[in-house]
Length: 606
Image (cartoon, rainbow, N blue to C red; front, side, top):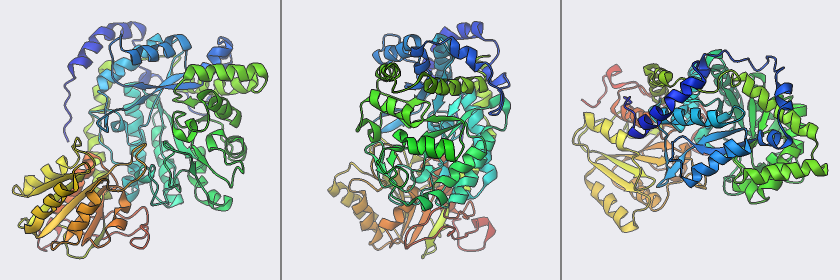
């Protein structure tokens, strides 16, 4: 794929305003400093600690929500954010994604780096800047390599590629000014109804997930010049839940022995491979805490299990405190105090950081929390800031951004993994590769009317089959319109149906929404054989077991759309293997091997 190097007018304007100041403050980019490794001395932390008041020590434990765009100075949201940085002295911020029409709007890389530089300049103490770069910077930033979801790496069965993903993520992050990556996902997704982990996990087998988590961390830590803090999540394991903790408290209702052998295995591996931090889960685990407290607030789980039993010495960071798995149970201040009591060091994304600081200060003054307990967490935070070189240089070189993120090798890696991830579970009518362009049709099932998903797939197919009929259905369409679109496929001899199901916070499920389920059912039981291609949730076959063929890409990324088109056309061999099982339909390791069209004399598309 090609990514334009042209910067938006806003990016350029922002850059010109701040480039001079940023260079005055630091002529040496942070990425050029050689950060200490996780095991290196952090002897400077005590002196740094002594310079902080109790208020500022507690503030260092808070990571607030921020964005990667550059708003005008009179923007109310920005003024509040700036107040938290300049006056409250919080420890850092997370670059979250803005949502518009249900879609995440990626930040522009240059604009984002300028904004981070400016924010670092305004902070009294250098800031930890985090982001959920689970699939590289492309999860939040435009013009970066479009890596597929982690489950695609699991399907591709390529640990070397996973290690490269870790290294690439670190380079992209540090080039943009992000020094803390909330990845990799260490959850073992063994519940097909899990609405929030799903393709974010490497798979269902705990050892396979452990190996992939280890490879990602090793890659992220492989180059000291781009060393980035990583965070394995969501402890003690969010993969076997049927609830979205953004909406409610989830429950892991497995016995301790099962949790030890499955959920905890990847976290043990993450600790052994030097994970800098571990993120908690807002889920109750009755086998580990009879009080049914969220793990984020459980001393048994965070201190007893993670610290004492597993021996983790790094930062324990909460999942977002704004999520209903916590916010629905306690006020922000009480949740903050309880999290620290349980053993957490960093409070992520509270809705009211000042209320959290006040509550923790009151807890210290009343004796509920000790100053020693606060200082232990602050030292870990300051040590992490030292580790990524923030006390040597807190800004990044804006001139070097394109060199790091405009890397053709990363594009090739992303596409190669997406290609190798395509897994063909069944093909009763030999629809892969497309036997003939004549009579072939494409049906795209999109999640909403504003989505552009499926456009890349259609464009790639039409490059080779210009007259390919394409039918687009989305979840907000009324039933009679969807029925009319289904009726238009009557002339099709075979239908390639692409179903997009995104794993998203607050969605609550991973099924086709609206009338799309009924729409696809009508195609499934119609006269033409249907090849269902799942772009996202790999368990979609459970709802449509009678389709003639089923392929999974394990990702909604553009690279996965391209891979799906190549697989349909026979341009690539299909060799992915299931990293998860589909109850009654597919086992881990299943997947048909189909050679590329030019490797066989069978009837392929001309």
